[in-house]
Image (tube, rainbow, N blue to C red; front, top):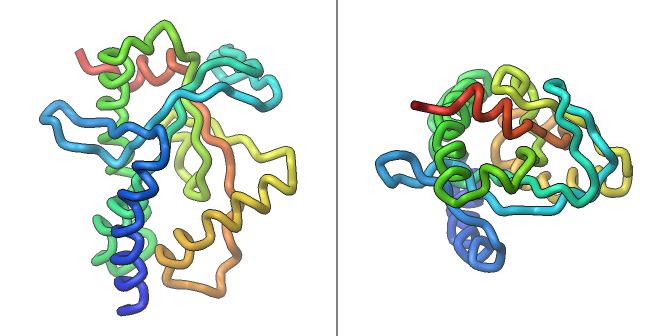
Amino acid sequence: MDIRKNCLQVWSIWDPIYYSLTRLEYVENEWGTRTVMRVRLTKYKGRNIKLMDGTVIHKNDILLKIHLHNVKLLQEVQNYDSEIRRALKIYKIVEESLPSLVHYIQIHGYTDKIKGLIGITTLHKGCQKLGFEVYPFRNKYYKWFKQFALLPIHLIATENFKREIPTPMYLMMSKNDLFKKYHVK
């Protein structure tokens, strides 16, 4: 659809401006190519959460916040003819980026500084297979705000506009689980 491609083109112009206004940093793979992950350190401000491996995330713990480079992802999958194929491709791209994230943490000296990863997404189906745990928002106003903020991504990415707008969720993974699952020796 031409409208979708035009929106994606406008977004790709806006994205470098957005990036320059944030404290995000690109995560590169072993060949120096940027992955779909952009990250920054953040202090956790939510309620205490005990992750499956026993790690407890407390208020003010340092986490690495993940932002997917949505423009890059959507450009990668725009020629796929079904939402299932697009979802599988996104899953694979994210999975392939996670070892680079481990390397990023190590080379930036964050190994002893952070407790884990956090992200907010509407793409939470299948995240458990990647090692993430999914948590709902407790504050309904923040949930609505995030749902509204992520709406343009949803409208550009989906074929079926009649479908319900997905609910954003927190994704979390302990540093220990990340290193166990994705550390490349």
